[in-house]
Image (cartoon, rainbow, N blue to C red; front, side):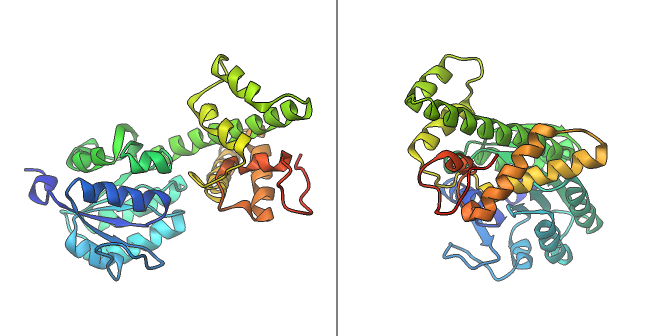
Length: 294
């Protein structure tokens, strides 16, 4: 009998940001008893006092935090409460070394670990249609599969712990650079006196069009940068990519340039906005004193 069958209705969720809070709500609606914790207290059902308290009540714990430092801190607080029945699932995008260190800590306590960053924005999280990239033991994934299926439309086992982090970082490289060049294309179109809706129409019938460009071009045209995936988090992931590329001696000029643009945009105070806010560099509502980035 699997662990999930023994404890079918209890799960812990740590980290109640844009995605974690919505994943927790999807799990509640599916009938799970969801125990939650966040560094800043939130008015959420079953909000407990510490990560350790969650481990006492739930043997599968999903962690949605910002970076490797936060992940290792949480795992450190969980460690003394873990047993061989526990599965700790890291759903944060972190550097591969932090993912592996977290796995070592969890496994030293006899518990199991999955590295499982996701793709999907706020709407995907609300609809239970995230995509998980999983690194770890296939047998552990099978024990947690029913839970992960509740909040996802696809689960891809991509390799070992740390390798899923690399895949997620690589895909975010493409997203970040795509939105930056989309913003530049928008700027060139507008500067030429052409309605940017014509660019949106053209993208629908061009090989360079994609679900991402279809999602972001209306946002850019409307100038509504409500966060679905924040600029500060995309910059964090870009910095992971730059650091990893430096270590591996891989030249990544497109991403390096995009990271520089995003860094300057964060300095302007746009870090909490959606990462498509880089297009604001070319729009009239940029804050007074801001300069167009090059």
